[in-house]
Length: 186
Image 1 (cartoon, rainbow, N blue to C red):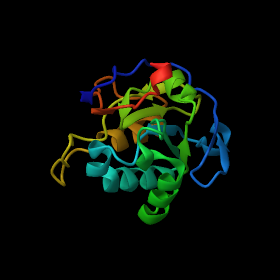
Image 2 (cartoon, one colour):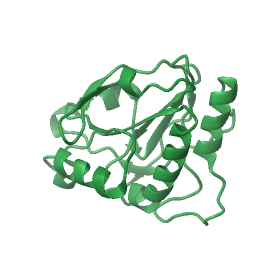
Image 3 (tube, rainbow, N blue to C red):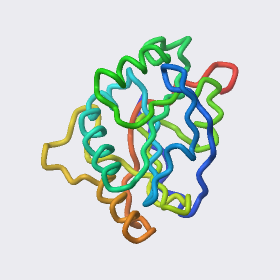
């Protein structure tokens, strides 16, 4: 079932974390914070919405990193119910797809809950002071990619945040698969 998270709660603070990559290396928020802003993405391996735009996520994330914006991806799905979203498969995807940013596993789902993540993909764009300025979509894609010339909404918003400290006031919520919460935490 498709889920759309709420639009941006401007100025909300980010949440610290110390989470492992699929290979077990622990990464903290401080390790990924960018001098000009930080993008925290909640994604997973199996979601058709993420798979449809993974190449665009990588293009935009790597482009933002080249501009001094920190990027991290987090998967919080219940890997017992969805083994393809577990750490070993995450590490494989990150290697094969060429992620230049950490891909972390939130086994307890506490970080996803702290951020208020609701779906994959769910994008949180912060300014250099750690204040939320973007909670929108990557572009007009859904379960299928938008046309190649679709406006790069996330990328443009993060560049604006890097330059001005503030995000666009008009944002379209992301859409994707619901996060697969553990039964004992729903």
